[in-house]
Length: 294
Image (cartoon, rainbow, N blue to C red; front, top):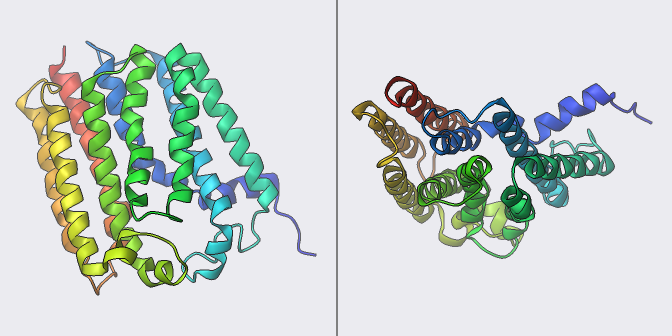
């Protein structure tokens, strides 16, 4: 019988399995929502910052763990995913379930320590982020559900600081939602035939590669419109609008990398550029806040 991995090794394998580094997609937008809510300084204090960070990371971790649990049989028959931790036997289903429930508990605890509204909404946030894994079973709109699961981050962070809703973070939520859906459609191009053969739903499986890319481009255009709307009135100088120029240029470049029959740069378009977009937009907005917000 093969030796069981150590606890340390299991944790490392788990973090690799859930693509912990992909937290870079939504987390900067959560920090942006937090900064916009904490007027005039943009800083809500270390306690609130730490709890928002804990809530965001634990919620995403729970969602990704559930995704690997729900998709374990599908992953086992897909050449692209069969070496993921559960089908490859690197982690047991029991181990991943423990990490999943621990992440859910951490999220609820963090939400309860923020304010009453974050606690009340915590089950909703968990449902939105976790249920994505099931949507591909019945609708090609699954990419937009995934987008919503990331997009709630800035609104959640705003509520964590203020204890109430507002229009500005909701606009940013829609920007992140459509941005995520656009690049997830690009990523799904790799599995078009597999999804169709196994009864799974996606934009590429429904419409084909060429139309899927057109839908992705239109989705990113919508995302950019919401991003512009969210930044209007939130920036403190002309410099702040550089974030919009940066995002627009990067989105256009991302769309230029992938062709209907050329997927060699999908990983660059999916992870590298989108990580740069989220971090870049936040850093430019942060500089605008520090230099011109007082």
